[in-house]
Image (cartoon, rainbow, N blue to C red; front, side):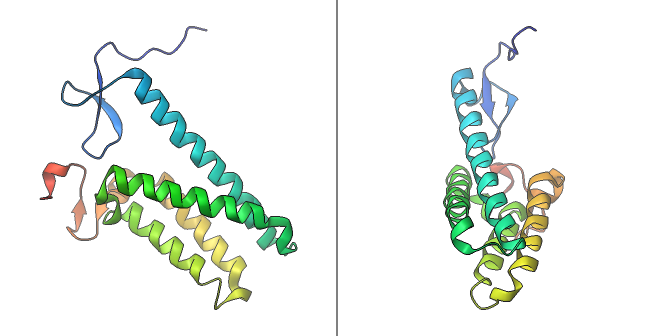
Length: 158
C-alpha cells in the first residue's frame, strides 16, 4: 500500500486553529501538522480509556479503589484537552462544543451532592460527549452569544 501523502501546497490552519485547508496564509509544515494531530488524538485516546474505566466502575458499582486511577486519568486528560481548546481558540468557550463540555464538568460536580445519582449522571455525560464529538459542525460551532454559527475570527471582533 502506498504511503499517504498530503498535497504539495502548504497546510494552513483554519481561523479556528484546526488544520483543515490549503492556503498560503498561515503555513504549517507537514511534520507540525502530523505531530499536533497525533498528540491530540493520543490525548483523546488516553482520555477515553480513563472515562471507560471510571464509568464502568461507577455503572457496575465496583469498589472505588478499583477504578479511581481511571477517574484520575480521565480528569487530568479532560482538563488538558479543555486547556488545549481554550489556548488554541478562546471562541471554544462560547461555542456549543465548549459550553456542552462545561456542562459535563458541571454534571461531574453533581457527583458530590448527589452521589446516588452517579450512574445517571455518567450516562448523561456520555450522551453529551457524543453530541460534542460527533454532532454536525453547525451545531458544535454555534455561538450561544452570537446566536449563529461562528467559524472564523473575522466573523466576530476580538
